[in-house]
Length: 150
View 1 (cartoon, helix red, strand yellow):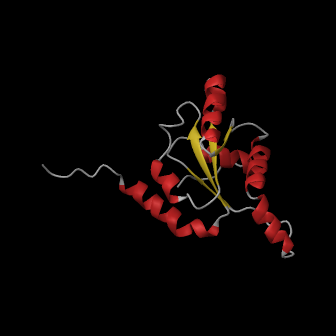
View 2 (view 1 turned 135 degrees about the vertical axis):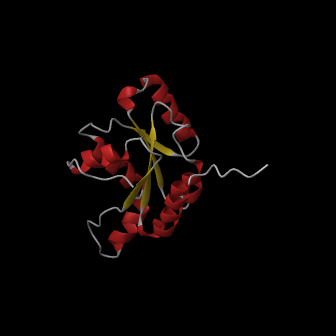
């Protein structure tokens, strides 16, 4: 019986691009669908970004069961993963992400400030499987309608 290659080439390419450019970012924003958080994660992403601060963002909170979403956030936090649930169209999404990232990067930002560098922007990468809301989230944050998915 012949071997079947099930892992799509575009997914392998994306993982390699993340690996090659991970040194350029301070934090990884992994987006998952709040309705199916386990099924909408690519386990390779977690393995690839494990050395960087990693914020799990559960999108489409408005479409998910509120209690189940809260339970999932607690589950991930119990596993040591920082997780937030968001409605990607909410006006507060930028503040939620910035606050969570600032909390996670407090030590690094303090070291940078000690060197005299102030107001340095946080560099992040948004990753996730297709259709979890990456473009919607980014478009809303920058108030544009033209961010492209890759």
